[in-house]
Length: 208
Image 1 (cartoon, rainbow, N blue to C red):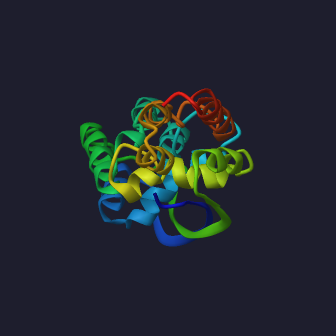
Image 2: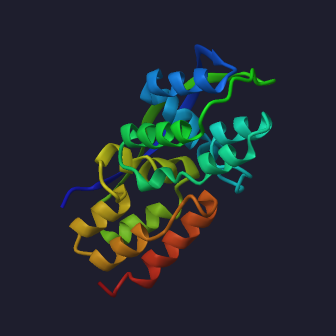
């Protein structure tokens, strides 16, 4: 069995130069911006605000709310990125919601400035070669490590799973893997998610 290598993810925001202040302009931008830009605006709330549950789940929803489109803001906010395993699918769902919004020729009071995430993934120098050592190391990881292995893992793997569950399944811990997969990090803070996962790991340490 391969070792589990704990990694963490760091972001720097970069301006794309794309600015819109109409609904039509926003539609075009969503179809054209790169995936690192979609990633930034759709996942930023859980990456940066991991200590709370914000009013809206992504930057697009906040922008529409700020410009007096509460219904569109709500529709944007209920898009759960963890349903998708590719940013192409996220883009398609965003485009569908925007298309259903119809025409709106107003110039909004607040422009939307698109930014992209410049990401750096670093190894933490922790490698687990058993479930016991995995649990011990998991207790000391930070929320950005959790984000990398739990949230963006779906996009890297192209599957509705995460790095923790994938490794545990390979270690013969199927039930533990399934229970972790059932947890939704979009519904809780990352601190809560760490506590939930640690509870699962300890409860099932000798069960599977």
